Structures are given as structure tokens and as C-alpha cells.
Image 1 (cartoon, rainbow, N blue to C red):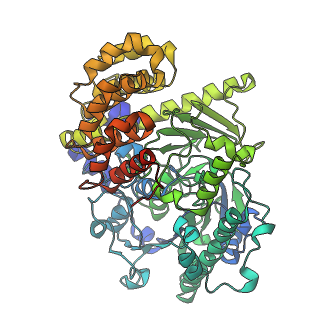
Image 2 (image 1 turned 90 degrees about the vertical axis):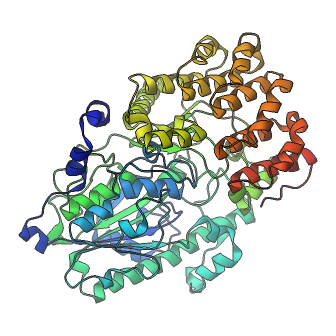
Image 3 (image 1 turned 90 degrees about the horizontal axis):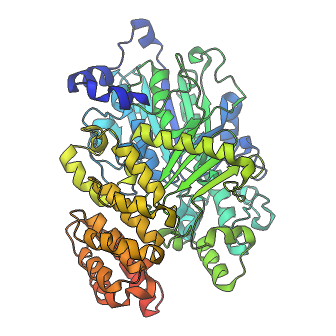
Length: 636
């Protein structure tokens, strides 16, 4: 993506519009044979399908689709959760590059960034979405993106002979379908007895869950919901065939991320990002050597590639701004060597994680290693599997594989060999035999962050402020870029988890001109805690008056971790009532993480339970209050 670094500022707004948005004019002959394109998407499933060799899957329709097309073995999403992924899919850009990386945010997009269905519409396609959006931006609106979006949207409503791009999404596989007995029974009500699963006989049960009847019931429900999805997908395919459009329509089947259970959904392991992807292309639209019936491809594919691929197959130029790349059609770029992913705020909790995955290995960089794997989050905590994990924690009955992910901290880096260790249980990052691989993948991940412009390293409260000045979140880094700002930011964010050896560099970074760098400096000094107290207390004390609320909160946290509660707690209490909602959330999180040390702030936390701009502040404050009062965690 050197395009951004070397050419971005050379393009005027007019040039951007002309080069990126117009698409190439299609010749009359091409228009006459343009393919229809159907997307069959679903939520929260990993490749637990018969065509992927799963011995328990009952998925005859998707299996048949795979026999008629190509099945991808190395398809991955750019995040382990729906909305950030879907923002990347609809734009062809990584969510952490355009500011849609935090769950349930509402980013301002740059005016030139038109979601790809708009380009298809400009080229004459009828574009429908039935019905999930979840794009994390409100402009352009669904009405601008789609000809029709909603429960009644359908390709049948187009003009005669008009090519269509139609999306149908199955919501029944969502984690709520596993967690809710009522929803599960409703979705699977039409399954026959021979389509039901025996929970005790499932051999694919992951070793990182406690093996109990309760957790196996969740695993069984996942399979049965997938079977219900397969029947629904079969209906869509049958509808296409009955209309006589089977040979005129390219069909994609995919999921928005992995299975909706802990350590999968929201995570960047294969369990959270490895997805099924099947594409069937009728012979008249098939490029030689591509998508032959019954073939299997091990090409690396990322979910941000889906949109560019549709454009390419439809004969519409892929915009230069796209970070995804077409993997089918003509004039393809070199195949990927890596796919990348990011985790940021998941509902009410921040955990900044980045990953690079090649055909065999996965590298993970934890920028906040002092946070536990399983931070307390309202939604997953309601699930039976998470409750069983908590019960096993409390009783000391978890298997070793599950205990790995219940620790209070994480390693700074993780490296896994997926061929030898498909469940990613054996971290090779500290193994000298894998040092070269670790360094190679670390470099690939850092290069990607720099190339796309990783906004996730800027605190969310600061992003909200800078967005107003820049005009969009993307342009925070590219409108008037400081030559070395991003490298300074990435460097100090890395230093923040290095421990006492980084003290001098972190102290120097406290005086950086940019608040995001100062934030990570204060965070890093707080991570070190008391060993850095003698050197850092003066600098952190000065930072309590920083113009940035994020820096003030990080400095207050650091002082509290150094035993200076009388200096840090008042600042955190004050920020709970500040003007910036995401700073309020950050302050609540710090107070919650301080546990018993936050007792003097109990009244402030109780006051924060009402009149908040978002529910996440209330959730965190509520947990902190209940923990301090020794009561059950009742979440709103």
C-alpha cells in the first residue's frame, strides 16, 4: 500500500473522484453478458461444513455448491466480530484504516469513499441487501448504497434483463442463537430427528473449553443452527434455478467471522477469523484456470477482498483506494503472502491486538498485555460456555488448555504453527528455533499497520475530536501527515509493553507533540508501575493537566499503579463526568481494573450508572460497583 505513503497528497479531490469513483465504461458486448452476482452470507460460523471435511456437519446444499465451484481453505476476516468486518467488506478497506474498528461506532467516511455497491449501481446493476447492514457509518446511507435494503429487498424487483448484485444474510447462526434457548428452538424447529446432533459424540469439541454437558450443548447448537442455515441457503439457490438464472449468476457463500463462542468470536485466532468461502461461477463467466467445479484453492483471501472481487467479475474497475484485492477474474495482482486482522474495542472493553497470518503460521501482537484474555463483557458473559469457564476458574477444575486463556495477562507476542497446532495452544514466540519466523511476521504486521494507517493506536476519545477537525477518520492520518508520526506512534505503543528497560524512552515520549504518543508513553509507565515510580511520578503528575483527556486518564492510571491514589483517583472521578463519552468509558475501565484501590471512588461510580451517552459506560461502572459491594454482577 505504498500508494498511500507516496501518492495520496498528490491527488486532488477532482482527481480522486475521476480516478476512483467513475469505474471503467463497459463495452456493449460486455454489458450483454454481465453476470448476476448473489451473496449468501451468514453470521458467526467457522468452516463446520461437510465440504470442509467436518464429520458431524449436515450441510448438503453448501456441499453441493462446493462441488459445483471452488472452496477456499484459507479465507479469513479482518476482525473476529461482525460490524468492523462488515465495514471492511462494504468498503474494501481495513476497518482500522477508516476508523470503523471499534464495535458500535459511527465513523465519518471521506467523501470519495463510496461503498462498492454504489459503483455497481453506477454501472447499471440492481443492488439489493436483505437485510443486515452494520457498517459502522451512517453516511452514505443504506438508501444511497442500495437500490433496496430490508426484509423485502430482492433481485426479483429489478427491471427486465437488468444485472443484479443481491445479498441475503442469515442471522440464525448468530451467538444469540446459541445462547438463547427460545431463539435456538425457533430457528431449528424444522430440523428432522436425523438432523439433530448428539452433543456427547461430537469429536470436534475444542480443548480450550471445559468439557461439560453444558458447553457441549452449546457446541451441538452451533451445528444444528448451521444445518438450519444450509436449508435456508438451499432455498435461495433453488429460487435462482427456478427463475432460469443459475447459469447467469455467480454465487458466493461466506460467513462474517468464526463461531459465536468465547475465544472465537471477537478473537483473532483461526477460531474467530477463519471462515468458509465457496464461489460458483458459471462456465460463460469463468476465467481459464479459475473456479473449476469441485476445485479447492489454498490462496490467502481476506474479507476486504470480497468487494474488489465482485467489481472485477462485473467488469467495473477496482478503485485505487481499495486495500482489498480481487482474487477472481482477469488482471489479478500477485497473490497474498499474508492476511491481516485487528481487534479493538469490543462493546465496553478495549484490547488492541493485531495479527498477520500466512499459509501456516499466525503472529499476534498484544498491545495491552496486562489485560486478561477474558475481560468481563456483558454479552459473552451471559452465554452458557462463558459461565462454565468462570465456574471452572472459581473451582480450579479447568483443563490446562482452557486455563491458558483465563490468565490475568497475555504475552506481548504470540506465534502459532497451524499445521502442528490447529487450536493455537502452543505459543512459539519465545522459542529460539522460531526466531526468524517471528521476526519476519512481526515485520509484516508492522509494515501493514504503517501502510494502511492504523487508527487503532489512537485513543477513541482523541479520534472523535480529531475527526471533526480532519473531516473524516481516515484523513486524521493522511490529511496533513507528519512524516514520522505513525512510526513514532507504533514505536512507543510497542515500548509500552517492554517493561522497565523502556522507562527512559517512555519518559521522553511524554513530551511528544502528539497526544496519542503521549498517551502510550503514560500507559507504558503505568504498566511498569512502582519500578518506574521514582523517575516517572513527576512527568505523570504534569500529564494530569494534559489537554487530552486520554493522556490525563493514562497518567492517573499510572500514578494509581505506583501507589499515588490520592493524585490519580480524583482525576479519574472527574473524567467520569467529562464532555467526551469515550473518555468517560476509559476512566470507568481504569477504575474497574483498580479493583479494591478504587473504593474511594465508589460514589462516583454509582453516580455514573445513570445519565450516560452510551450503555457501555454504565456496564463497566455497574460491574465495578458490584465488585466493590460484593454483590452479583447484574448488568443492564
